Amino acid sequence: MSFTGIDAVTFGVSDMAEARRFCDDWGLRPVSAAADRLVFETQDGGQVIIRPADAPDLPPAIEPGNTVREVTWGCADAAALEASLARLRAAGALREDGTARDPNGLSLRFQVSPRRKVVAQPTPANAPGSPNRVDRRSPVHAKADPIKLGHIVLFAADFGAMRGFYLDAMGLILSDEYPGHGAFMRAQTRGEHHNLFVLNRPGKPGVNHVAFTLADIHEVIGGGIAMAQKGWKTEIGPGRHPISSAYFWYFHNPLGAPVEYYADDDFCTEAWVPGQFVRKPELFAEWAIAGGIDGTTRRQVVAVDQSGRGHA
Ligand SMILES: [Fe+2]
Image 1 (cartoon, rainbow, N blue to C red):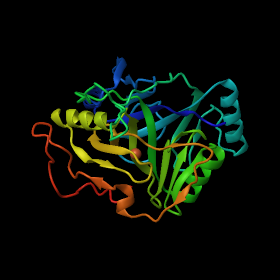
Image 2 (image 1 turned 135 degrees about the horizontal axis):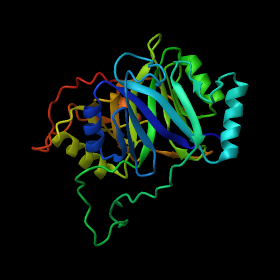
Image 3 (image 1 turned 120 degrees about the horizontal axis):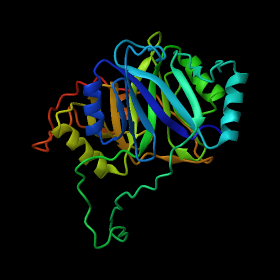
C-alpha cells in the first residue's frame, strides 16, 4: 500500500496579502497567520501553506516566480509510512532528513496523514424512472467549501524519469496515459482517478495546476461564479474532462500556476483498465467555457479561448 494522497502543498509567493485574500475567497479555512507563514485547510484537514518566496528555509523552486515549493504526501499509518520510506530508500531517493526530491527537483515530504475522512453529500440527480432527489430542490451554492487537495499536475523536464520515479519509487498507480506525453497516477488502488498527473515538457520543469475537490458540479459552478464576483480571473472553465470524467474550472491566482475546482471524477479499483490516449484538445475538454462566467451577469465572459490549455 502506498500513500493516501496529498496532505499539504507549500507555496512560495511574492505577495503574502494577495495570497491570503485569494485563499479566503477560494473557500479555504484559515488556521494560522504569521508574517512569514499562512496556513489554510480544506474540509479534511489538508493544508495549503503560504510562505514568502525568499524564506531561507524553503526548498528550492523548480521554476521562476510564485510556485509550489513542497508537496507533502500522507500515509495511512506508521507501518505504511515506513514501507513507503523503505521503497524510496531502496530507489536511492530518500534524503538524510527524510524528504526526497523528484527528478524535477521538487521537494517531497512524507508523514502519517492527519487528514480526516469526509463523506461528501452531492446533490442527487433525477431522471425519469430514477427519482434520486425527492421533495427537495437542487441548491445554488454561494461559495465553494473545498473538501481536499485532490491532485497536482507537474510539467516534467524528463518525462521518463518523472513517470518512473512516481510509479516505482513513490509507488503510485497508473490510471491512464498519453504514452510518452502524460501519465495520470493515483495513490490508492481503490481511489480517485488521479492524485498526480505528469506532463512532458522537455527541459522545463514546472507546475501546471493544483486541484481542489468539491462535492458536485453545482458547487463547481456556484464556487466559480463566487470567485468571478470577487474579481478573480478564469483561466478556463467551467468545462468537463473526458479523461477522469470530472467537471472543472481553473482560476488564475497569486499562488502560482492556475488552481482548479473539480468534482465527479472517476473512482477506480483493481478492475480499472488504464487507457492509452493520443493527446488532442478534445481529450482535455469535452466542452469548456473560455474566459469563465461573469459574476454579475452570470453569462460567459468571452468566446475566444486564450488559456493556452489545449492539451492539459
Ligand atoms: Fe486537474
